[in-house]
Image (cartoon, rainbow, N blue to C red; front, side):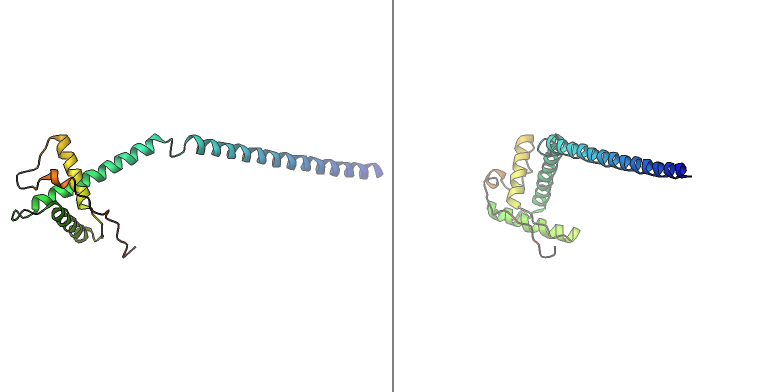
Length: 160
């Protein structure tokens, strides 16, 4: 009986040591896995950051090009609607364009958008000179409008 009691005690001790060994091994493997994941994260953040991501930069450039084109299209369409009476200066033309486009966007979408008329006219000037498509005879002279510098239109935040 004493031998069986000693054997049970040795088996229990052996099982306890085995469980402790497996627990220690599992904790070391967890630590190693966490270190590998941290190393992969550091590698990804270093080598695949936004400054090195050409796809992100090309998407940003494409988005900026689209915004320039939208401004030029709005300027072109609203200048075509402008009444032909009276020649006004470049400042008045850009201010008229800015107020008309802002009012139209507010009426159509319900969004209060800040539109920079002088910048849109500059984009239209750049497009017409690079593409060789000159505006119809009723349009104001864009050469004088490209030099207009108005303060940058800041977005309005009355209703955030």
